[in-house]
Image (cartoon, rainbow, N blue to C red; front, side):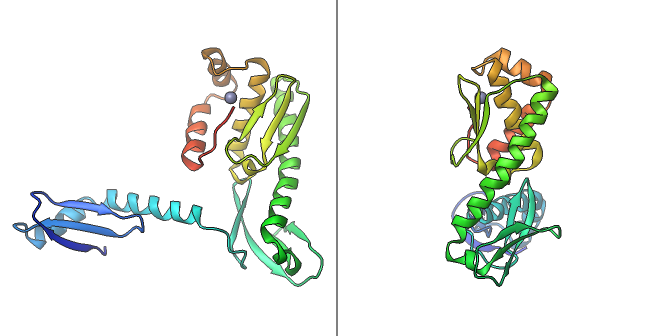
Length: 222
Ligand SMILES: [Zn+2]
C-alpha cells in the first residue's frame, strides 16, 4: 500500500484518505515506523473501502468524453460506446452490448445520446408501468418522460405519471421501485404511514431500494 508520511507533533497516529484516493499517515515523533506499518495493516479494510468510495465518486462525476469503449448505462447494464463511420446521425444498442453511434453524432454527442436515452426511457418505462399497474390493479391516465435532474418521478392529481429519462441509467429493480412508488401515489398522495404500509405490502424491500437510490444519486422522489 502506498502512502505519504508526515511526522507530526500530534499524540496519536492518524490515517487520512484523500479525495484523490491517496493515503496520508501522520505519525507522532515518538512512534516507530514498524508500529505505524502494523497500524496501517490493521486498518487496511477501512482504508481500501474509503479509497474505493472516492474512486467511484470521481468516476461518476467525470464528464463523458464520447470516445470508443466509454461506458453508458441502460437499465443498469453497461454498453461500450462504438463510433462507426457515417454522415447521417444514427444511434442504437447492439445485441453485442454496444452503444453504436455514427461519426455524425459527434457533432453534438450529448444531444444525440440524451435523445436516445429519452426514446429508450419512453419504451422501457411505459411498458414496465403498464405491466406493474396490471399486476397491482392500478389505473393511471398517462406516462410522460421528462428531463428532470432532481426528481425521479411524480404523480399528478389527475393520475398522470411523470418520470425522468435519467431513471433508465439505474438498475431494473430501481426503475421498478420508482414506478411502484408513483403508482401507490395514485391511491395515497402523501408519504404517510399508510403510504409506506402499502409500499411494504407491494414491495417488501422498498426501503433498501430507496436507500440505494439515495446513495447512488442526489435525486429525490415525489
Ligand atoms: Zn412520493
